[in-house]
Image (cartoon, rainbow, N blue to C red; front, top):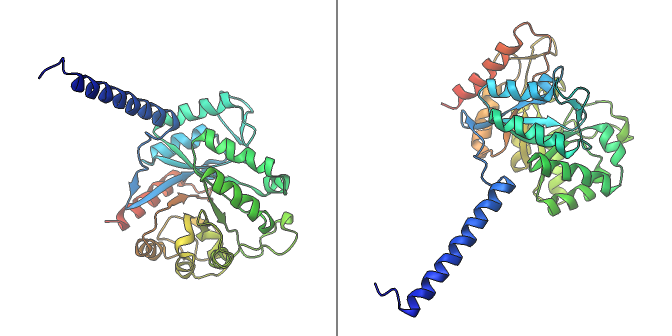
Length: 308
């Protein structure tokens, strides 16, 4: 090869520039979290721990317990969860300072856990009202936490503002359901989200952006007497996530999958039929169960075995 050829020199210079640009892009991607590995599947589904399951402890406890279950994602909530024993009374919410957010992300990374779909609660929606700047605080905090979407129960009058920010940030939002008749004073009327299938239809009727969808809590729906598989089907391509629960046949307690009145296996079959691309959150609210930790392990096994 003639290294003195001026054309070859130009080609080498161009290759050098392209290499530096590519290297810079990789560094930018790493800094922005683009190098994060994909969420791990369990039985063909992405299964996430849920911070509310361990709400009697701290966020660090929830991270540790999620990792112990062999899961690599955790649904969190921005309603004021204690962060850790070491940080005292410091809470995770929309006002948590960046230094503490960095400590939270460092601990999660060390455990191999990613955060998904932080929940925004009723008190927060009351404070937000029609103030876009207040809602923007949550979106900015979400970016710092490395998430790409939220869960919650906004007033319908807040949908326009919410949709605007979803487009701006390219985030998703999943509207969660409590039971029919749930008391939530900030709505100023009857609770509107008791049937997620009907909420999905309303989103479609209003031609809402596809970033707006549903988080289906099967436990609350079962307590309302709804057909869980039919609601799963009705949510269709608006379904972003589930708080997958089974409910005791006589009482209202959450119970391990396959032992109550929710046909969890049939729900998973329907999700496969739909080509569901969201995640399943293990929100288990039977806090006083004497076999609490074993219950959670059994639930993870159930999903894994259904996927075989």
